[in-house]
Length: 307
Picture 1 (cartoon, rainbow, N blue to C red):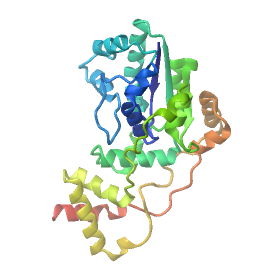
Picture 2: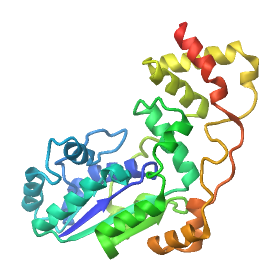
Picture 3: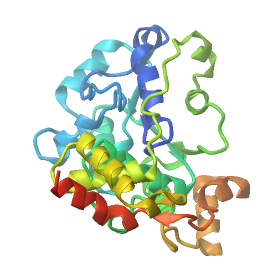
Picture 4: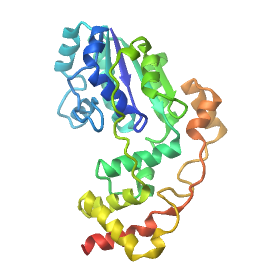
């Protein structure tokens, strides 16, 4: 039996891929592919993902590979099992992945492979920050957020870690040059032949929220206020201060994305088995443009405190 791990990263079409797996689970099973329900987190907006397997282990409540999951795999008579969680792209959760894979091997499932999708790093840092601010209650500023998660944004560290677990059965895909990442993932996994039979699902979690709105939500999170209160405070702050209406805004700051050395780029290219164009798509970046959102933070907080 073949065991496939879809490892993320966040904001690379993972929710859409996960929902495609879930919505087509019966069709997939007819083709010998199991998308297990054990450990599945049931949130369509964010994707039907196997994150509860990770949280159960990391909180000490469950084994890395629960007995119920082993039973589901055995009873399915499937030839392939696909797990998906972008939480595995957090280096802090590598201990679960390591234990999970070794426990599967202990039960005779030795053919484990991993697939990772990477997007442009500068864009990834911003989108990751926005995702966790809007949907996960983050209250840290953007500089604090990325500086406390350097491992999560170190692609060479991630790929080398996954290579140590999966060896030659690990593959990385570049997100930014893909026109349809869900299809590309299925084809990379060897299931391109059934893509046209699958039910199409709406892209998940794609509503764009701008930097000012995200900053308003962050301030609301900081003060334990609701999202709507934060957005109302933003409207009031912009109304009260004419200069806040001027210019484009950004969370980014100069130096937020490293200038990678030639050795780093070479090692990443070799570890990912990528072309230089693929490396450029994830590491090249422009310097930030626009006014930093922290210029308006105090005004938003003032409005929230006096609402």
